[in-house]
Amino acid sequence: MLPPWPAWLLLPFSWLYAAVLAVRNWLYEAGWKQARPGWVPLIGVGNLRVGGTGKTPHVAWLVEELLRQGHRPAILSRGYGRQTQGPRLATTTDSAATVGDEPWQYFEQLGVQGVPVAVAENRQLGLDLLRQAHPELTTVVLDDAYQHRRVRPAFNILLTEYARPFYHDWVLPAGRLREARAGASRADVVIITKCPAGLTAEEQAAVASQVRRYARPSVPVLFSTYAYSPPRPLTAAALGVPTAPVAVLLLTGIAQPGPLRAHLQETGYSIESECIFPDHHAFTPADLAAVRARWRPGQVIFTTEKDATRLLAPALAEALASLPVYTIPVRAALLGDGAAQLRRRLPPIASTFTS
Image (cartoon, rainbow, N blue to C red; front, side, top):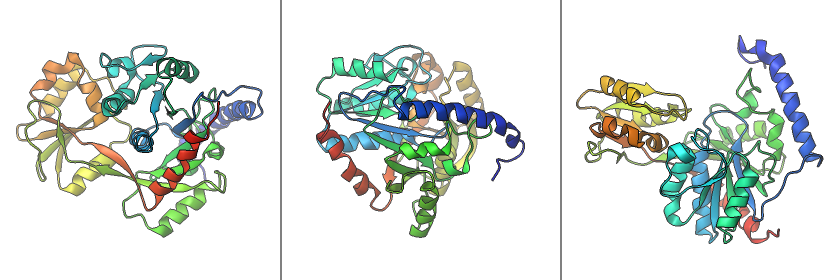
């Protein structure tokens, strides 16, 4: 099936791009280009598609599970959108500007549990930094490193969105795939994300059969959904916990605000206005002035935890202070026995590894 008009006109460029990436992947598979393992097991979490597939809540789920199993995990990310360069270990003096919004969210959520968070464009340099600073680690979770072939994960988790699965997409620029669908063959587990909570066994089987056209036959295909928590105050003007059917202004700078919007509407909130910015958007005082112009007394402003890491920049404090802004926390929840299946595959990775 061809992509929709006029994207199919770009297919020759997609084929060329896919061919270049296929050669690159073959060079790694054949050993002509070196992929180095970590000094501890590396667990990769990534996707084939550009845009939000739910990596952040799934990485958090995975790290919390590793902690429950007694491991000492760390997170290594590229640090997309940060204003710094090179390997960097997140500390309390950092921010979304210095390490990136997603790594800073990890640090705020998991740093208190002793989980180091590092960023590096070159993941090998990031691993070297973690080894020097935290030799006690037992595993490192690689955030969004599925196409970063210089390092070799012991275990690869591939995420793909239920509404936008990789097997219905095309390589850039005709579609949104970073590499061809055959890249799914490197996965050890495939998780279909952002599924309806009531997805039936028959529907799951139909999706799994499509995935297995590209993944290895023995690879488990799991399904997850989003579990949202009640709103949490972000600013001093956000008092108490608003309950439906309060009027809402939705403020986001993420790739896929649709699931949050749907959740709020299903919960009974009345979304009267939206201020939607691009993914990883660096908010400015002018942006918040525009938000204030859209906001009216009586409305509450809902945003995501990821957006909150950028909204709390010191330069925005004055513009943000008097607005009633709340975050809507979200966590990944695997359907059926998916969590048990994934747990069974994690202990051997860390316990049997030898460098």
